[in-house]
Length: 439
Ligand SMILES: NC(=O)C1=CN([C@@H]2O[C@H](COP(=O)(O)OP(=O)(O)OC[C@H]3O[C@@H](n4cnc5c(N)ncnc54)[C@H](O)[C@@H]3O)[C@@H](O)[C@H]2O)C=CC1
Ligand SMILES: O=C(O)[C@H]1O[C@H](OP(=O)(O)OP(=O)(O)OC[C@H]2O[C@@H](n3ccc(=O)[nH]c3=O)[C@H](O)[C@@H]2O)[C@H](O)[C@@H](O)[C@@H]1O
Image (tube, rainbow, N blue to C red; front, side, top):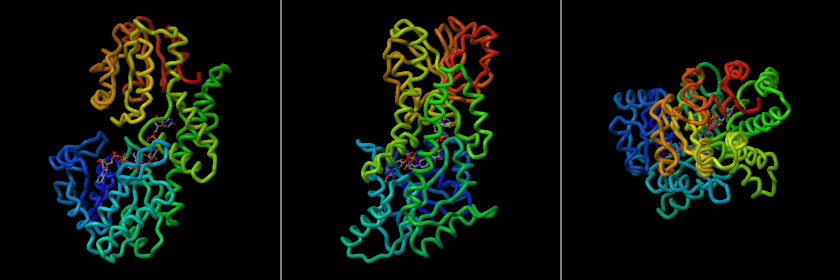
């Protein structure tokens, strides 16, 4: 099939590349000329394991190409995916300007039937707005051309995006007409060989399903973080509690890890957007509001521990920080807990020397103006002469470090662990002071 993907960010690029991998012909559009130029030259604008090789393979095979030319992109695909950003507006609701601009562009240039598929995360009612925006432009053109609007939200996780896209737990298709449903079934047939994954439903339910999934996962995390903080006060170990409740299949082990708060481009913005939708329709989303407040506080949890240990004024102190990305296997710094932690430590006068296996360049771009923050080239050099080590992201390389080197490099053997990577009894037995989350 011939497919256009509008927006070549995390979701657009992964969607386009995986669909090309299945033999389709895909044209990816973006408004950012630098991004498109890089992709055309075989480069890749993001770090996502396995994606660079897959992009190059499909581009070389002539199945995947990139453009900034809107007319060309609209002419190309019978299916037009919209995968542009939906950032939070001032009141927390999703800003739809990029989605609607993409929809208008399709209407401006289309010359026949198109299936417009919304992959961006958008509030309930957006498909109606997309339809109305397109109809308005078509009316201006005096062109009575047919089109369908489909909701097909994406559930991939950064760092595991290819695996998630290729083997989805489910494929949500919100559509109201048979022609569009048939096209979507044909598109996703290669992903259905093992078992049926498509759930066809009405458009509004599909749009809400995406927010419901992210909000539920964020709720689990905030719940576990609050429980962890309580466990700590009570002298219990949250890691035992986590295993104890995860064993119940009604609860399960996934997404039950307490930590330094959830970050990333989606949980924070989607929790806000769903709460805003509730407000707009007269439903106070009390649970969600608490989820967000708990997360804001959790991002400062490690700093609270540092302050309890060293006092309010941290001038003259230096801290080593391992892990800047909002989670492992990505260079994405959007809403990363590390940003809040570095800001607060340095605001209190401390210096921070940070190391991340892949996110350093991106971190330099977003936090580089902070004069008290420096970036280390490796794990070990971040430690030298620091008052303590803070662990913020659970990269694999941090799981079994050289503890002797940590001991001899730091001023004192002191670790603040925001991801509960180590065995407290063993570390304390080795003479470390070990302050983790909920234990
Ligand atoms: N990042 C993730 O892991 C996931 C994101 N989503 C959702 O997918 C959507 C996209 O997210 P990301 O890919 O992370 O965003 P992103 O910011 O990485 O990429 C969006 C791209 O769209 C481009 N763009 C904006 N307006 C355009 C237009 N009119 N025409 C062509 N290109 C345009 C931007 O230049 C940018 O490259 C959001 O709604 C997000 O909530 C859904 C699932 C996972
Ligand atoms: O809509 C989206 O964009 C995506 O948002 C999340 O994916 P992502 O943000 O890439 O990463 P996650 O693995 O979900 O992690 C999000 C945050 O939660 C934190 N987290 C996750 C799991 C956990 O048990 N504890 C925890 O604190 C992570 O450290 C990270 O900061 C969802 O998992 C995806 O299904 C969804 O498609």
